[in-house]
Amino acid sequence: MTKTELMSTMNNPAHSILYIEASPRKERSASIEVANALIASLKRRYTRAQVQTLDVWDITLPEVTGHVLEAKYAGLAGVELSGEQAQAWAIVEGIAAQFKAADTLVFAIPLWNFGIPYKLKHLIDVVTQKDVLFGFDETGFNGMLRNQQACVVYARGLNFSPTSDTPAGSYDFQKPYIDMWLRFIGIRDIHTLIVEKTIFDAETDKAARAAAISEVDKLVAAL
Image (spheres, rainbow, N blue to C red):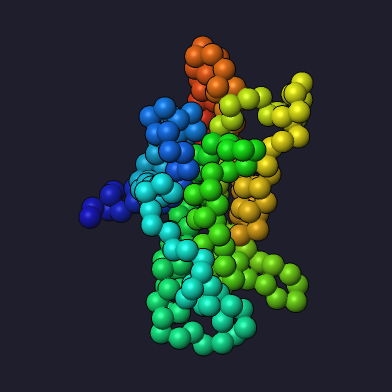
């Protein structure tokens, strides 16, 4: 490596992006379309960015039962894990390691029944474990992801803004839950893009996506 190349690498360190995709609609998904634009902007900002995708619809997540559950409570009790428990827990830690290794977490999240898709909730339930993504002591809970930033794209079919003329304004358990969870695991640097009215007519849907995408570069510039 030449001196110039070395200096360039030092001035532009590698940046790891973990993209968590929670919509099964793929090419039709508003959250994915905006998240793709966001990732493209991040790659322009961080020229040595590396993106890893965690598609919750295309990953085998362990059930939080059996040896996983036993390992969880053994850990809480400070009891040494058995061989089978340790094997099960290693899978949990392996999935969570992807979160720990990332500099930026990007989420594409549709709203389902006023909350988040069950597959994403399953992922959260798997990785949100003591001594994995959080700890606690006499002072309270302590999240372990203190150096990461999160960019979250939310898609909603209706208008769920607090100023909405419909009751939808008080039905949003999507963004508040994710914001709380991110803070719980230690992330304080949280940035949000919202796409609403995606089940209205095609023109309204298209305009909503375009409006969210137009905010992408401004969001990335604020990181």
